[in-house]
Image (cartoon, rainbow over all chains, first blue to last red; front, side):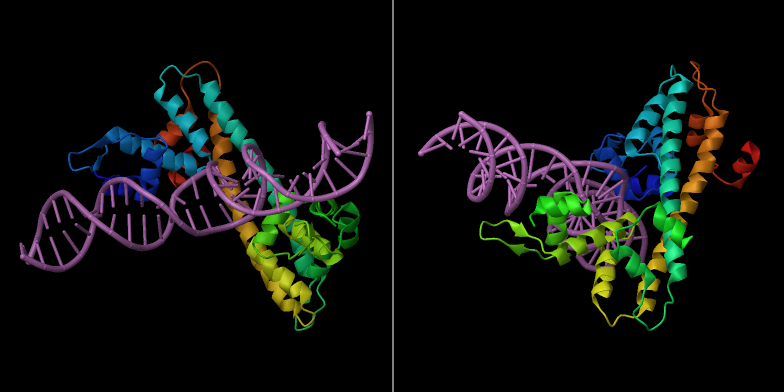
Length: 139
Length: 139
DNA sequence: GCTTGACCTTCCAGCAAGGGGAAGCCCTAG
DNA sequence: CTAGGGCTTCCCCTTGCTGGAAGGTCAAGC
């Protein structure tokens, strides 16, 4: 397969696939004309990578997952730990975003959003008390 | 004030403050020895930026918010729109993360996490059906 | 006066994870 | 034989900084 075929199969852009080769995630063969040749196993790996990335795993996580995937002797505990750590990171991010969301929603709510210049959003950004006191007051 | 002082005041690293000058967010004066001199107004702006960034606004959003903040003739509607768009982006991100989280939590749950090689996480990443069928089956 | 250490300056490099686009082969169809 | 699409490498761009090297400055201590 050429890169276009495997791109269509995996859903990854050709650019991304070349990048993955660059950083050593896949090692396609080369034809005499210089074209990359992807085997079934390469296509399979790329699909694996696409799905791992879609779940938010970092490239390094993907590299490790792929290595475990190829290792018939792996312990599932190793895989699980990577996944659990990722789950934790996701939870942290969600928590962070929710906090931002809460503050921002408050401010948006308090802002008239008309032609007048008075704006609680700007007022808040301009003052220092981003602490519980203020949260209580605006709650 | 020197950069160290304003860094302590605003909570931003000196590096970040230099970067903000680079991209034109603040314009400190210069002393004869080449040191940056920050006025009260600069310190104030940096604090504003720090808080805006903490709420997740992009640098471009911050630039616009800062301009509106300095414009006494602004309409609060303009501020509100920036904030609302940001709120939407946050909501999208939260939704995306929650979906990842759900899938991942399922898989982690299904994985024994012991010395054996069998691993539903890898099995899932290796197969193509990331659709409702599978969600139903694993639910 | 001299040294030491904490500041400050600039510039260069790099992170994640690719995206955009130029310049130039290769291959096939009409 | 030419047009087009696909492929190649190469390098810069993105976001928002962060680290480090090489060097100037300043205040304190001896």
